[in-house]
Image 1 (cartoon, rainbow, N blue to C red):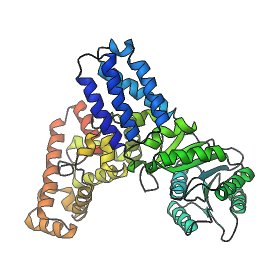
Image 2 (image 1 turned 180 degrees about the horizontal axis):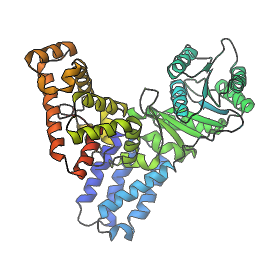
Image 3 (image 1 turned 90 degrees about the vertical axis):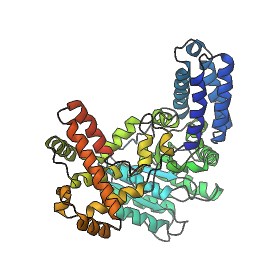
Image 4 (image 1 turned 180 degrees about the vertical axis):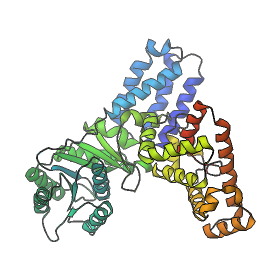
Length: 450
């Protein structure tokens, strides 16, 4: 995510930190490079001009020139201005008390509205609500079928009608929701390859007659300034309450994320960072600014860990570490919890100090699958007692998991090394706590990252 702009800014700030003393002249030279990096990242040029002016006004003052660590002070100023650029966090959905909360998704074709509708329904389910998905896109072939598949995966009802008008579908859907105790209704509306009068007329009619409580503009982050231009046009003609950026995990530049709030005045509510239905995150400008500057994102990392790691299992693991009874079943459990946190490279990028270094690592996700296959090919006795392995057992496991005996040996070596280290930490409460965090999030050795 944002690898290109992050790498450029990191190189620029390294030059600042390398100077013993900063002057107004070399500050302006450095900010000229920041300006070019932002333009190359496809950030709106008016936004860049205003951003650089704000940073310059602060950077050339006594705040930086007389600072003990002027290089770090400039990074802080840029961080603060990036946060201001993306606006305050606004991830609220004002749910209604006495009627279904109606949410309307709009955007161009291909922006990911239908998938986002499913992701949003998944998020709303976690808040204890009962959403209803509505297939209001009668233009795109298979749009209804796609939404039905998503609804089945989530166990969420989908309202649809064939050979009907979008406005009538939405009206009957709200009535259906009231009759069936669904307290949130999500309209998946039609899109076009470009903005046209017919599309806007259809959306305006739905909005006028249904009066949705929230309208979200869904756009593909990877399209950069095209997304910003479309957002501005939709807001001018239709109006919306917030933005959902999709495919942010594939966006190396960041132009849309950094421009859209400044151009439209509308907050980014959520971001899609993967294909799975649980890969919709609330957008927090301060956390995103930290990621862009390679400073990590501890808060999001902890939140993911809290969602992925079972507290009861973690406590059980802690007791096993203290009793020196950790086995390969526990190893497998921890591995599965890591996978729930998302792609490994993405998780590593949230760790302070890693930043863009995570992109330079050869993170082999397939290696995790290989470890899981090896452990699953073991008997319960073998998982509980790794000391009983011999040549024939290892060969049988290698054959069953589609790996080699060298792979099996490597896993057993890593496991024994980890268990030995934990044994050495036994009795050291501070060390155990630290190792508990590591074993809860990264239960593997050098074979995973080369």
